Length: 249
Image 1 (tube, rainbow, N blue to C red):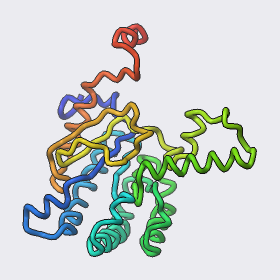
Image 2: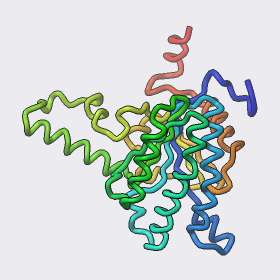
Image 3: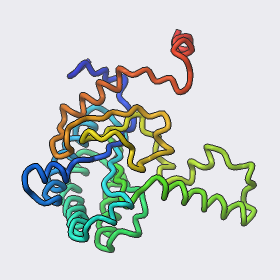
Image 4: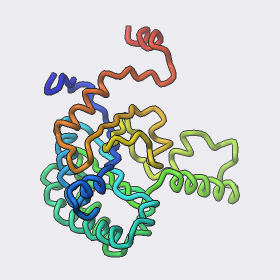
């Protein structure tokens, strides 16, 4: 057992995070929204470092949704520039900590420079094995699910599969996260209690943790509190507590 009574033998394999509150944090300080996004980078670094130290294998960060393209042009441009800058700056740290970078979403909708820098970082870190950091960029769960449906419909039309062949396993293979285990824990900051179109299929049995902290204020101790809370939950997956007890005996 370590800090916060955390049992290191029961660390979730995959933690997903909705990083919310950058705009409100900046507004409280009389600054622009992009100021909040820039200050959120420290929270990203703390989260990744703590997760890696604890032995988490996958961390997925909801960095930019498909709906975010509708935000003011200046904010979107600033976010894309910040993304390129941060990726370039953090490659060295990712390599030193043996962390691989991946990305999910409609990546080809990203500006060309942003896409190229992202692909370069993914390739550069691809052999790292300690942990995988997944950035959800230009991503939405509805977009992902519709894409999977279209791909399966196309295969049926081409007679590569039959409709009756489609099951949960086959459907999952057509999602962006086909090579990644489903999250056991989803963290959302800023006090909002909603999922915002993020990993809807994948979080069917995830534990949800909401904190009032705005994202730029989220630190290592806050991540540890989320893990400690996760470990207090009884994860039944549709079964009863008695059934779980019998299995463990």
